[in-house]
Amino acid sequence: RARAQDYAQRHGVARWYSDVADLLADDEVDAVYVATPPGSHLEIAKQVAASGKPCYMEKPMARNLAESEHMARLFQDAGLPLFVAYYRRSYPRFVRLKALLDSGRLGELSAVNYMLTRPPPPADATYAWR
Image (cartoon, rainbow, N blue to C red; front, side):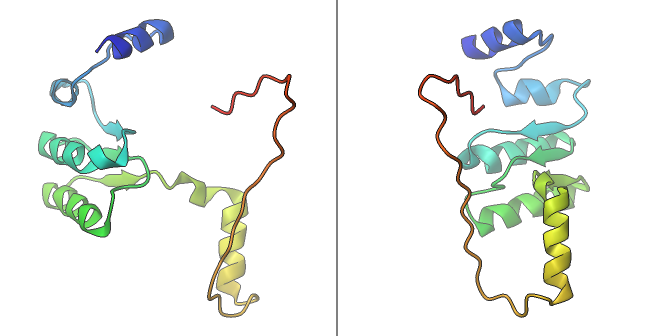
């Protein structure tokens, strides 16, 4: 609770919550964004669906397929949208890659190995990766 209050004060957040139930009880909250550790996603999703609010769930959606399917059913049964934060799919480079894959120019894809690296920052540089 103290950390949430401190963050809210430092960033000018007028309303903040340290409890999911309090957030969901607020009639001015129209939708919920869940950015907690994946192990808590299913339980929070159950509460959000029961509250009647749409949900935008950070990836990974859940810890396994069964939890993901359970969450999807909860929102489908409630007639509510459930979104997963796969926003990068709309980045131009990924749209181009998808078109290239769909075109068949690369043949039949059987595996992908991807590595993203960058050189370390200089020792005296301020490196704020977040």
